[in-house]
Length: 202
Length: 202
Image 1 (tube, rainbow over the protein chains, first blue to last red):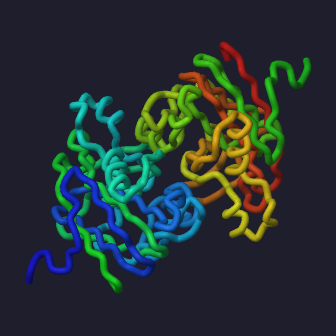
Image 2 (cartoon, helix red, strand yellow):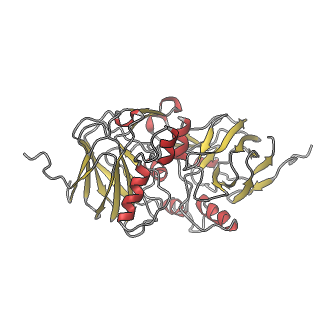
Image 3 (tube, rainbow over the protein chains, first blue to last red):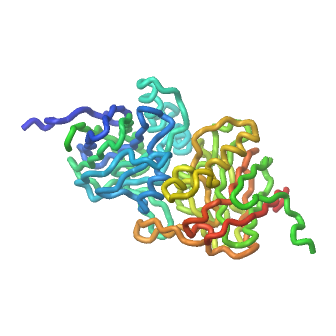
């Protein structure tokens, strides 16, 4: 069997990619090498001013992190992506901003260090959208420990080939960034490619 | 002694108000009647595209909720407001979106129910700014329980007259909304006025 059978696309390490989803389609994001965080955004294709919002989703789900069956909602409180399956341990993050040029300045990285916020901007530009403030992403496979109200960044616990499947609840553009963070342990020190699959039935 | 000695202004129940702060000034927000949540936003007066961001602040503070000494930062990771004092128990929220017309639709309220998002828009309009997507607010005195990753909305634990003092780390516009939520227990069922004081030294 072809290892890439059924794969729709790749998000190369440290880069961003976008995909249109029609309502009802399933997006499977596959953590191909096991320790890669994928910053993920979703925008209604009818109006990019309506987008997946972590702060609205937490209020709607009454959970910090969605599980199977939970829907993430937009800033107008409409379901946009629903978790249909998750073969990982379900460790994902809704609390932390995408990395950006300012973060890498703090960390002393080179000025041209790749970052998820600029990846989002680039992909939206490809899709014909002008720049605007990045919403907080849904950080797939990101392992943030919250014990006692402290925020601790840890390496992912996901294993190679584990995946999460999200059903589109409206027509939308999804943007994924294979996080370029190689200074903190967020990607276990080594950003890698991830793959994704779009299907009509999961 | 005049009960309102040193008070700069009032945020009437269910309404929003804005105030300019110069770098170094202290904003004290007083929970006059004890059980009122105050949704709070801050925008750099030099560029309203730079604003206080909860998702960046959590990453910077390495905490879910700021305590005395902690600085909230902007979407460009610069300190904007620092907690200088807090006479409440320190129960505030950084996770939940402002209430909006969509939330009250869900709750079956009248279409003209006041909401914090529209209060923000109205105040920014007064200050000459056009509408844009509301950042996640810093919800002063809001009591959200997170045990086990569940999100539970509870009445405030703050007492009458308790306050939080925030120092401006840059010139800015702060917008406060005395949350109109009277359906869930967020304001103990009864939205009320709050007061605020701006001083140069705390």
